[in-house]
Image (tube, rainbow, N blue to C red; front, side, top):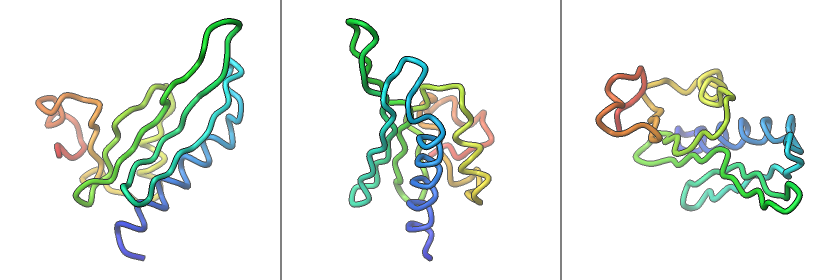
Length: 112
């Protein structure tokens, strides 16, 4: 399997596993995945209601750009990046895009 398809499958497997463990969040929000393999966007959403308050949260958002996995959003305390690394993706192919570009050089991950 080529690198691009391997990264696609890795992201989908990791996000599916996360959602499977948390089908319903503590707020009774439904957890769903959205996978766009054509444009390489991958998300987990939490959707539902807390009494009269609407819950709609992008929990995780990953893109694949220029052969690297870009972590655009991590709105949890779960180490999803660790799960991706455990599947064999090197830190040099993971961009923590939720950090400012000027700060990425201080991480162990790719700057871009």
